[in-house]
View 1: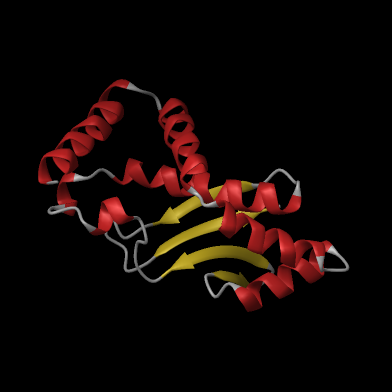
View 2: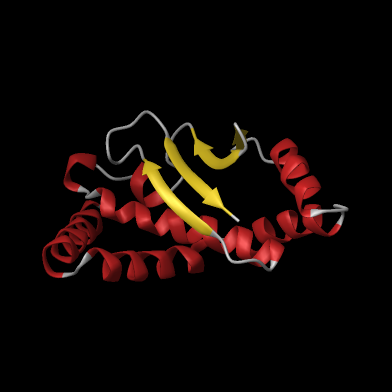
Length: 141
């Protein structure tokens, strides 16, 4: 397993060296979109379909998903630690570029776009891989 971690870490490092920011984001967001489970999307869709308005959905989804948080009228996905099994099993996180976390941006986009049938903008604020004590993504609907 350590070998695959090193290989992927090197792949991301090479992406950092060879690709512009836009292309790195596109590749990793696409990967994250494929990582989310259909059951996670179905749960969010259910809350959306049972809500009388988009605003009600936002309120209700904050109640059922403790990671989805409203702060001063802005919405965030906040994780107290990284939930990515690849990251959690990585033997040396200092080898892994935070570029990898654009995968999670795609995951969050896929969740909300599929649940609400709206375009969503997700901004990576900081992550555990980048040295923060949490992972935080700002969501704009």
